[in-house]
Every structure is written in structure tokens, then in C-alpha cells.
Image (tube, rainbow over the protein chains, first blue to last red):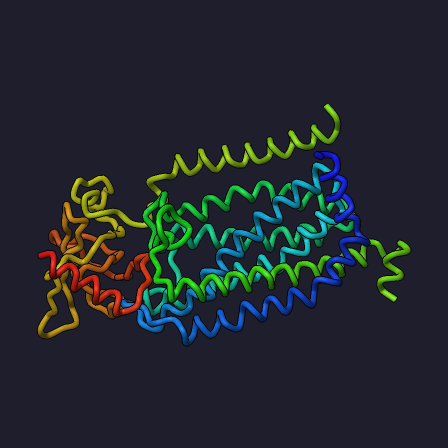
Length: 247
Length: 144
């Protein structure tokens, strides 16, 4: 049983098979994205009622919160793939980690930007150096540092190994971001949904929020798969399957 | 050990090392990383606030907001329900500022009153439509 699961995973991770699966799934991913995003954004902007305190201004959370979740999720995913690429020397895992970084950095930047825009009217300031905001900013620097590090090493294997170690060391920032609002006094409020007990958000607001989060997730998968395909082709340019796929 | 197991151990060591480093750092800087102090901490003088600029966080006490007749100065008390500190502020208050709402105030002491140069509203984690809020208020009134 154990060996057959490994064998299946190994086959999926072979570059030509991964390439074909990514190619075939793209149209489905784009379709699923639209299926989630359109009702999500409608619910976010029109369907959901205004907030009792913040009025209409709270609607920015429908982008801010899913983007923040994705900034953490993508990082954990990348660190997992980094471990696989280090331990099992997986080529495709290394490429998927690398292909995830731009999406992760973009979602982190989006989180910081939307938070800042919301913070000015609601808190009264664009930015404060509290633990939540600062640790999220560090996450952006880790993403950018990872991208710069991997791009600066010409040898593929060395680049993958160096990047994987950076990702694993940086993984410790993720629980710090998540728990910062509980460990310290911060200006940022504590968690609404990812906490013990029922979410303290009205159902009419929770639904569009979850749809938006789902659409962001599918968007990430589509972008990551497409970018991984490009990196695979580049890396395997001399192999037979890559020549066929590119022709 | 096979080379693969060695690499697995290496990965575990990296994770454990990073966790230990950050854990010790967080433990060492626990106080310094506080964005604000509570009124109880201020009153107990845990924060060493004399002659320094510091941040105070808590709820704006009910019925404590006083507006000056001839200037934009406002006075209010910030409370954590155990202790309260009186704050004076001249400036624009954020949208969410109101009695019973969380605030974080930066300022320093002057004659036993905290003179604020910045007032930030602290938002809570609850999101609900106005009707739900009205229903909660109505239920509270019934109980009393």
C-alpha cells in the first residue's frame, strides 16, 4: 500500500505527466474560478448587508481577508514542497514552489494594501508597527527574498536547495502572524473565523467571504500550474517530451 | 541511515532550530512587543511612563466624553473596567471612535492627565448587519 501510493505520487510528479495534467486542467480551473468569483463579488459588493458599525466601508474585508489567508496558505504550501524537493529530490516539487512565489507575494502585497486603505478611515492611520502588521510585512520580504535568491543562482539544483532552506526557516513566521493578535496587544483585531467557537460574522457576510476565498484559491492553482509549466519547459528544453509539447 | 533519512533529519533540524530561535526571541521581547499598555498596567506603573511617550489601549468609558466649548479639545476616560485614565486630545477623531469602543492613544503625562497626540480606533472582530445589532440592544434592554 505504502509503496503504491509513493509510486503514484512519483508518476504524477514526473515532468511530462505533470505538464499534461496542468495543460488539461487549466480550462476547468478558469471556469471554476469564474463560478466562485462572480457570485462572490456580487455578494460582497451588493448582496451582503452593511456592517452595524463600519457601514459600507467594511466591504474591503471580502478582498483583504481571503488575500491574507492565501498569503499564509501559499507559504505553507511552498514550504511543504520545499521539504519534498529537499528530501526526495523532487524536480516538480521544486518547480511548484518556485512557481507559487509570485502569487504568494502578490496576495501578501494585496493584504497590506487593502488593510492600509481600510485602516486610514477606520483606525485613523495608514500603518502602525503592531505585531500583526509587522509580521505580515516580514512575510512579504521573505517572498521577495526567496524570489531574488532563486533567480540569482544559475545552477538549478543549488537554487532549489538554497530556496528550500530559506522557505523552511521562514516557515516559523506563519504561526507568529496567525497568533500575533492573541500573544500581544495589537491594534489589529483578533480572528473572526479561524478561532475556537462559532465565527463572529453574520451568515449573509460569511457566504460571499467564503466564495471569494474559494475563488482566490482556484486562481492561485491556475496561475501556479501555468507558471510551473513554463518553468518545466525551460528546464527540460532538451528532452523529447518538452520539444513535442512546445511544438 | 540512508541519505534520504539524513536529509529528512536535516529538514527537521532546520524547523526545530528556527522554532527555538523565534520562541526564545518572542519570550525575551514579550513586553517590548506590546503595542499598548492597559489602564491597569499604567496605574500600577508597570510601564514606567513618567516623562515618556507611551500608548494606552482600552475602551472609551461610557458618559465620559466631554467636548470643549471653545476649542476642538475633547476629554474622555479610557478604561479596562478595573482602572481608568483621563485623556485629553485636540485633533480629528477616527470614524469608529465612540463611547464603549476600543481605542489606542499615544501621548504623555501632563499634570496627571494624558495629553494625546494620536487617537486610533481599535476595531472588534464582530461583523453583523445593523438590524442584528438593534436586536441585541433590544434584548439587553429587556433583560434590565
